[in-house]
Length: 108
Image 1 (cartoon, helix red, strand yellow):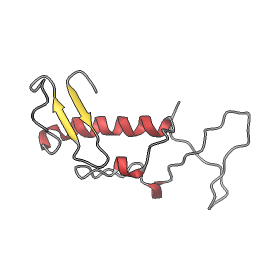
Image 2: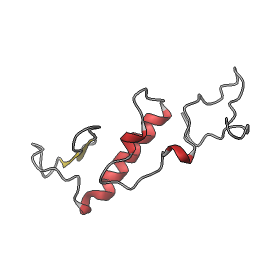
Image 3: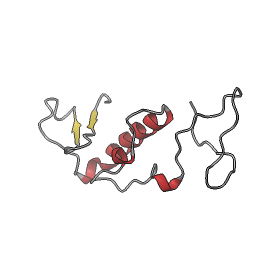
């Protein structure tokens, strides 16, 4: 949640997006409104990034694949992984299919 907008992602129900300045009581769901899509998609991307970087135990592709979004940023075929980034204490992780060292694209 941010000061002006609120995004609610419901795994098995309709998602919600509110403009709290115009609708402080959250009466009008704007999730499908094109004029709010940029802000909605930005907030959704931040939520996904947060869950993947922190290895959220409940993360899954279903949180990304929303009816209102064409995002495939974290699709399994794109190579997102759940291994721990190298910390210098253990061996470096290698891809199962290629045997090559895994490249991480995020910062903790």
